[in-house]
Image (cartoon, rainbow, N blue to C red; front, side, top):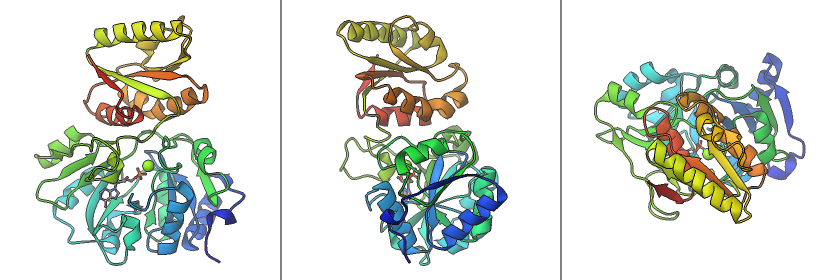
Length: 352
Ligand code: AMP
Ligand code: MG
């Protein structure tokens, strides 16, 4: 029998033991859906060479058919199964960044069903580094299409509990490998054109790519949903909390002043205020009566990225009327943090 979303009233969560990984691999080979940890976020996997299995990902997530999936491989040796006309630069990138949080957009091989790539003639490919993902891909023996394991438009999951909160009863199994280490999605780099183009900032920094490649073009985000997009993941509104989120961008002192003022104004107006801030900024507002999620020390951007989505979910659950967050710049992983917060803000960005 083929998968339909309604056929999975019970989603099993299992610790990622060798037995559970073997069972998960068997499910994947049978065309079923398994969520599993990667070093970035949890992915929702299906056999990438089975069109029906891949289609069920879209059903489970409520993902529009225009949004292509990332195909995960056990190693770069499997590239010829999914991509053709692979340019020489891929060897440089694969040697330096795989396994790891870099997704490459390549020419799609005919074996990959068109719906995996939302009808495009390209395919996004990555070799993840997480040991559970590695073991699962090796055991499955097939390329695995896996977008983030959340309902479309929601915050990406960084724990098995986040996956269940969105997809319980809609998928077959969740492999629990603990919280993910990077916490934001992979970098997406298009290498089909003459100049490599950054479509989405992520776990591999723009600076690292520039050091490897020299010139890297940075794709501009589409201003509004529905506008022509180079990459569908560049939707302005994404990762959106229920509450209205405002992102303040600028020098640290000015941002702090703005946060203090706006928090006090909103509280005085009777609003529930949520704050998503580095520890040092949060400390200034601990006694204010605001709901606070501290992300980590301001100099530890890796920790801030790792904690970002869990903090956003936790804050949202406390149902603030408004959330204030501060930009962390664009060096290294801060570019990815800025990108996700900008999208969570749906355009509510204050530049000081
Ligand atoms: P997710 O795995 O949920 O983070 O989503 C995958 C994202 O990768 C998509 O939303 C796109 O932004 C990007 N992507 C996947 N395939 C392609 C492709 N063929 N061309 C351009 N971008 C892609
Ligand atoms: Mg996603």
